[in-house]
Length: 68
Image 1 (cartoon, rainbow, N blue to C red):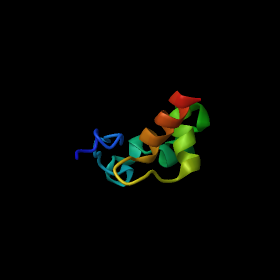
Image 2 (cartoon, helix red, strand yellow):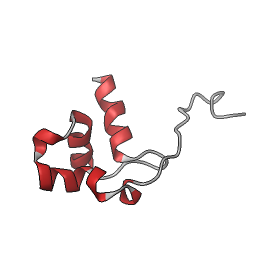
Image 3 (cartoon, one colour):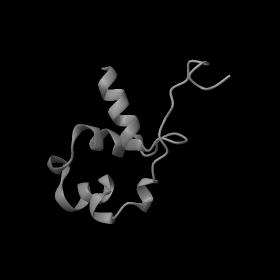
């Protein structure tokens, strides 16, 4: 039985935020540019601190925001 048949969400594997350039990482941006420079999803990702297996914190934050 595949993942769709089990009713699971299929999440695209993305590189870890740690592998992103420093200028694009939310924690580094909030320190250098301030909270106003980040999107709602990026701010929530900073608070979440980490994502889940196969889902970085920003993707998780976007998913949470889309549901509320």
